[in-house]
Amino acid sequence: MDIIGLSRNYSLKHSDEYQDLKSRLHRYLIQCIEDDQVSLKAWEPEVLSSYAHGRISRYISEHHLAVNRDDIEVLVRELIDELTGYGPLQGLLADDKVDDILVNGSGNIYVERGGRLQQTELRFIDDNHVLRVIQKILAPLGRRLDETNPMVDARLPDGSRVNAIIPPLSLDGPCLSIRKFRKEPLRASDLLAYRTLNEDILEFLCRAVETRCNILISGSTGSGKTTLLNILTRYIDESQRIVTIEDAAELQLDHAHVVRLETRPPNIEGEGEVTARDLVRNVLRMRPDRIVLGEIRGMEVLDMLQAMNTGHEGSMSTLHANSGRDALSRLGMLAGLAAFRGTEETLREMVASAIDLVVHVGRMPDGRRRITQIMELVGVQDGHYAIHELFAYDADSDSFRRAGGKPQTGKLVNHPPHGHGER
Image 1 (spheres, rainbow, N blue to C red):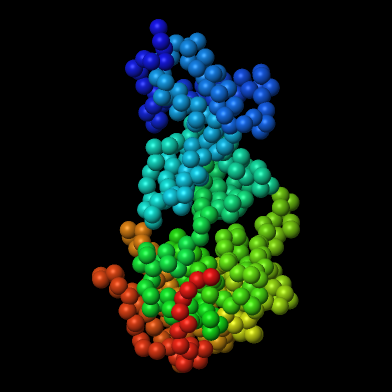
Image 2 (cartoon, one colour):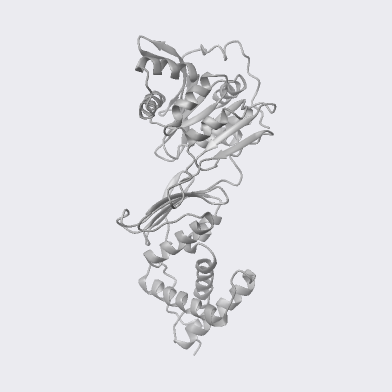
């Protein structure tokens, strides 16, 4: 009897039967590798595939299992991925169309494509399988994940960001979030094509960068703040020295003179941490022309505002917020948490003096990103921020409009547009 050609089908990946077979084959392959003293790292992929195919076919034949030829190929491919790579995530990590990978326990894997979240048919064997893959991801990074340290942030060698959290903090099993790093960063032409902005806004932002306005980009998670920040840095003059500070290095600056700095978490003993505030303070001694802070999220807010106020014009950063006005309120709240000792009025004066423009990026319900607002921070009047709205987005017509005439910031007055050709 030709066992491989029978009609019974294990290819329904969500079935318990398929997962049980896969689990048994996984254990069997590991035992074969140990018995044969196979070095996975030393073998070429073709040799390893041939080895796994032979062992799996033999197991299926010896146990009289009805698995067709196509399913054997699928099993071989998935088991090799699990042995040498990241299990069911291997193909997703290699797919350039996937932006985010979200694992909610062993049975639910979601991805974001084109701004939309969708559930996949992929799954892990069990929670232990998820843990093995997480540990494999973290092992080269020198990070630890266990019951005493049940959550971790890390960055893969390709720049992708990883967050993992496990029981007892995660009640439904190990959870893993991966924000993939683009091999080819988006450019201004891409934002125009996606209608994240229009020509008028792009020309204005280009001019704002060239004339060294201090710019704060606000928005929610996944709205495209870092993408926009990265694009704006392309308009900085080549003669200027840029120093970037990030928790996880994502910026891809196409610039001749860039110094990239990254924070460092504490080690296993809880020592050796280097915060964004430490780096901002150090940057001031590095003769930067412009400082680009990936995100303002804590104690570094005061040092960044002081830097913007003391000769480092043209600096930029991002901030999580629901609107441009909310971004200014969050700056005040963060400054309070950073033990700012002055009055609220003094703080507002400091913020208004430091920041010229607030650019808010919104994420629409259908996943589209839009620059929804550009505000000019003119100063403080009667204890409140004096704000001049320059551009706004109309969701009903999906269009942009000039909201309030010409900018009043001195840097932007009487400066004609210089075009927006990218380097």
